[in-house]
Image 1 (cartoon, one colour):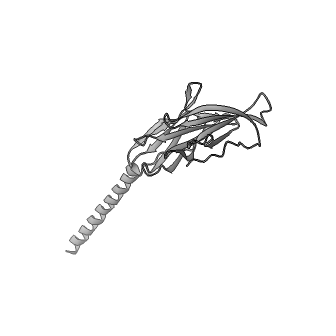
Image 2: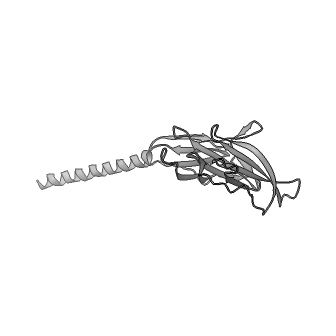
Image 3: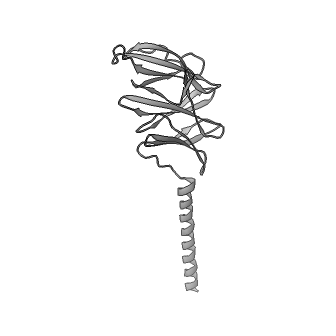
Length: 214
C-alpha cells in the first residue's frame, strides 16, 4: 500500500515536471520568442496609443541590409526593409506626427561623419510602412545629414511634424557654414515633402525650430 502510494506520488511529480517544462518551452520559443538583433541592431517596446497599444519593435542589420520587425502578437510578426544604413542602426523613439499618428524614428551612422534617418508608421494591420522624403519628384526612404544634425519640429505651425536636415557648405567654410533643408509632413500622402532651404552658421539658433505638435 505504501509502495503504491509512493509510486503514484512519483508519477505525479514527474508529470507535473513535464507540464512545467513544456509550458516554459512553449513560452520561450513561441509566446515570448525574441529576435536576435545582434550588436548592430536594436529593440524597444514602444507605445503607439490607444488604438494600437504597445508593440515590440526590432531593428536587424547585416552586411548593410536591414529590416524593421514589429511583433504584432505572441506568435505573429511583420517586417519591412531598411534603407540607407551601413554598420549599425538604433531606435531613437516614437514621434507624434500630428492627428494621433505616431512615427517610429530610427537612425544610424553613415560614412565618416554623416548620419542617416528613417521614419515608419504602423498601418491598419499594425505592420511598418516607411515615410518617404520627396524632392523634385524624386522619392527616397531615408534622409541623411553630414553635420550630422537634424531639426524636428512643426516649422510651419500646421499641427504636423516636419524635418530639417543640415549639411556642410563646402562653397564657404564647412566648419562654420551650412545649408538647412526643410521637409514638411503631408498627412494625406504621409510623405515629407521638400519645402525650402536656408543658409546658416554654426552656433546660431534656428528661429523656426520651436513649433510644438499638439
